[in-house]
Image: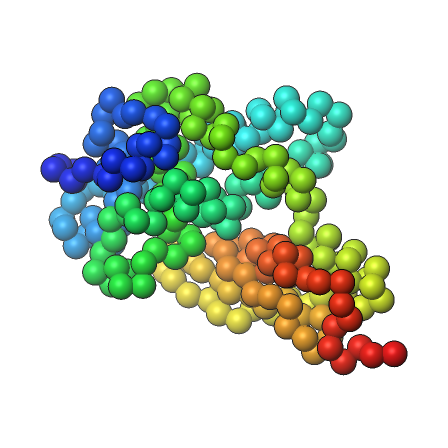
Length: 232
């Protein structure tokens, strides 16, 4: 275990939660690369596994309560938008997780990637669940910007296609640009284009997730202007 290593105090304040078993939080912030280099028996992968399940339950429950008229298909899409790696990494950054992660030497210079932050976010939820139960997890999740994401809950690839076709442009095209990482921690980079113009790129733990990320970024950056090469 990571005995003697204490997470920064600001993380506890950001979480608005006080751990009874501080070692759980330390474990949640211990990446496998650090554990391997330090000869530790535990990293955050088991807590990530648990936190993933707890997060899905809490998000599903909240969607069920807050969207009483929504159909199952819509609830599923909204949940996917909330628990995808880019959004989990965004929440993790709000908590300050990147500055707290214990990383191996090979990752320290460049810092944690989006995937690592998302995994650590889930691991922290797993740690909170073991330390304080499901109600504690609900409480730390509640202040996070769920409503904003819910408004964007429609599948971003569908929304991007609708926007482009509504402006008279061709359908977006997705192209895999990079694939890296070991089999258990794959990382994909995808570009989305319209005609000859690249709109955005996205990353994710699966090809589908990377495409959704690229579509979201394209939507965020789009202005109501004609794409280049589409005059008259």
